[in-house]
Each structure stands twice: as structure tokens, then as C-alpha cells.
Image 1 (spheres, rainbow, N blue to C red):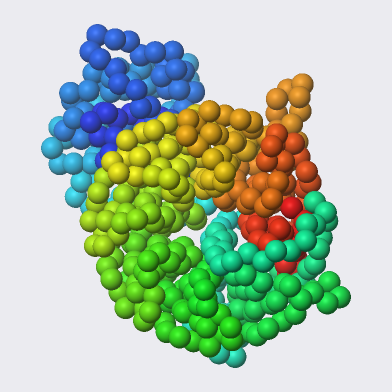
Image 2 (tube, helix red, strand yellow):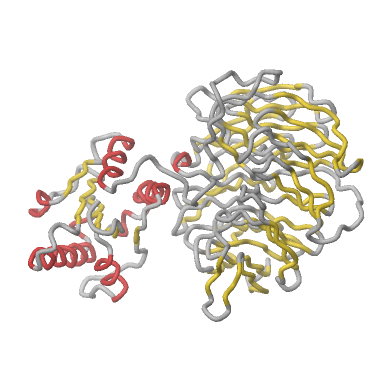
Length: 542
């Protein structure tokens, strides 16, 4: 790639929506890009920010459509960039700057200088073909996770492929893990525990290092899903520091497991492209249902509301099934670009509406009966946060750095709050307070009614003299609320952190001594539970 590889995307604002797949690919590739969302009228000049971004980015990606010739702003931008190219040539710097014309529709009339640029025809070729060509031009390979190190759908080598069954066969294939938790059921009255102190552990909960087990709790029963089995434990009966095992079933996934969900006496597992309903008391199979052969697999844990199960697939399709027998109610494509990232929004249901975010920058409300669209709200960034719905309000984060509170009826904005970076964390709403983390390495608490901030806490070690947060990272999990504590885990150093809900003061932190990844924390029965890549499931006092 020419120069520093940083990309300036020049586009007509009439084409904002058409650019969504392009932006999703850029983020999946990890490309540093600038995409402006402010309009510019004829007769105005490029502002200082635009001029600086053009000057400091050596790749100029021009989105070419029928609207291009009408865009005064685009003409100023490309003129500025071509002036920089000419200056480089005059100074003997060679071809440090690359101009790419991406043709999105056949109505675009080519400019005289187009022949001297890299020309990618996206109007007459399938998206995978021109995306691949663009990727080569930018010197990137297949889409990768936004976050460094371990992703939420991490590919792990795990032997030869085998069929997915509930049997005694050894697990096989490459495993993609989704750590989002779905705990339901009554909570037993358990004693308070000392904050940050291990209450009990389950050693060898996962058969493989680097692959944390996925927990869910129903009442006094803990269910652990690993790449080899699903096991139930009685956490009210702990002997020698380990809960009593109740039952276990062996599983053999090829590719994907997602967080289990328990509702009443039924445990739901998403394994590859199959949804399992098991008897939560003994692990026997009640029913199974397979997604269509052309779907890549299940991407979210099961959500059960009013006798209907909702799951989101890796191809961006939302499926609904009847809980009694697994028969399908409806399915609909919400986000065809969901496969590009390692984390996607999950559904939330309130009354007769389903709410979900999308990489196309929209937040959708669908009719729960048939999947038809009720409304959508366009943000300025991809939405991979899973919404929380409380008292007629949808709370959700966006890649445009905002936390949104939307009216469930029509999507109108009740309030929105600006953070320093993308909000990919899923909000938790408890006692009138919204808890949500941002990629700016802060945990925020906001008033659920007004959006007024109460406090924010650094997710890492804050250097007060410089304002820099060290040993922290972005957060995609939903904050776990347990008693007086709120816990999160960052996606860079995988440190579990507990804060006081009243003022944000740090209560405790836990980092694996061996450097292994920890999974997202889960609050249950006064405890904070999380699996670790060291093969252990930990239970700490919150």
C-alpha cells in the first residue's frame, strides 16, 4: 500500500447509506479511515479538519456515483489531494499517495483524471469480488476482528472435523466463541461474599487452554458450556471449594458455540447451526432445530419472550421459533454484513416489538409477530451493541461514540450521550441508572430518564498527570451488576474489574497470572462468575 496506509473516504452525503458496507469492511479490516458526516454547501471552503485529514492520509478513496458530479465538496477534496500528489512529484517523493476510484453505480460519468488512478468497478461485479480487489489495494487480507489479541468469535484449532451431536464423541473443528450471557430464573438468597475474594472454583471446566467456558445460571444451578461438554452444577452445595456436579452431556461442535440460556426447566444451546432445547434437570434432549444449509451458524444466545425464541445468525438473519417444539415462526435478514465482524448485536424484545442493531448503522424495531419493520434510526456508526429495553425506552450504543435512548413506539430520540470512542458495549439498566462502557476506556453511569452523567471510571490505570489510561482497553461486554458492584472486562488485557455502583471507585481487579484470556463476567447469586483461558471457572465476591 502507498504511504502510511491511512484512508480518507470522499463521498457525497446523498450516498451515506450506500457507504455502510464499505465502512463495515474497513472496520473489519482494521483500516484507519476518515469518513466525514458534516455537509458542505457550494461556495464554502474545506475546513481545517478536512484539510488536515486529507494531508495526513496517503490513500484517497473516492466513492463514485451519479451524485459525485453534483458534489461541490468532493470536487474540492479531490483537487486538494491531487495537489498534494503533484507536490510530492515535484519534490521527488515518488508515489507516496494513492487515489482510488470506487465506482458504485453505472450512472457515474468518468472524469478525465480517472485513467491515472486505481479504478475499481463495484457497479457490475458481485460485492465479494470488488471487496477482495479493494482489500488487495489496501494491502489487507480477509476481514479480521476489530480488537487485538483474542476476539469474541476466536478461531481455535481443535482437531479434525466431526458432526455435531449430543454424544460421547470428542469435540472437533474450529471453534468460534460468543461470551454474551443470558441468565434467567429465580435468584436464591445467598450470603454476601467478600469483594474480590474467590468463593469457589471449578478446575478443568474447559478441556482446552485459551478457550474459556461459557456460564449461565438458573436459580441455584450453574450450567457450563465448553468445546467438549455441557455440565450442570449445584452452586448451593459446595464441597472442598467446588460445587457439586449434577449431570454432564458431551457435545461435538465443528465451528461455533454461543452462550447458553436457561428459562425455567429448559436449557438452550446454540452449537454451529443447530439450536438445542435440553431438559435443565438432567440434560436430556427435548428438541433440536437446524438453520438452513446456507446459513453460517448461530451468533447469539437464545432469547425467550412470550413463548417465542429469538436468535441471530452469522449471516445477519433473525430467526424466531416456538419454544414448545422448535417450529419456526418467521425469519428475516436484518444485517447482511454481520459476518464481517467478530461481534454483532443481539435482539431485545419488549411487548410486540423486537429491537436490534446493525452494521449498516441502523437501529431496527421489528414487529414481533411477523418481522416486518416498524421503524429504524440511522446513527453515524455500526451498531454492534445489544439493546436494553426498560419502561418504553431502548438503550443502545453506536460506533458513532453515542449512547442512545429511543422511544420504543417510534424511535424518536429521548436523549443521547457522547463518549470519547465507539460504544460497542451493551448497556445494563438497573434502578434507573444506565451502565455502559466505551472504547475510550471508561465505564459510564447515566440517568436513565435524562441521560445526565453520574460518574465515569477508567477501565485501566489512569495516570492523573497525563490523563492516559494504561493497562486497560475497550469493552464490548454488558456490565455485570451484583449488589453494590458493577463489573466489566476489557478486550485487550482481559482484566476483570469491579467498581462501586455509588461512586465508581475501584473495588478489585483480577488478571490471570499466566496471561490467559478471561471471558466476560456474569453476575449471579451475589457472585461474579467468569471462565478463564487457564481452563478454570472462577466465582468471586462482587
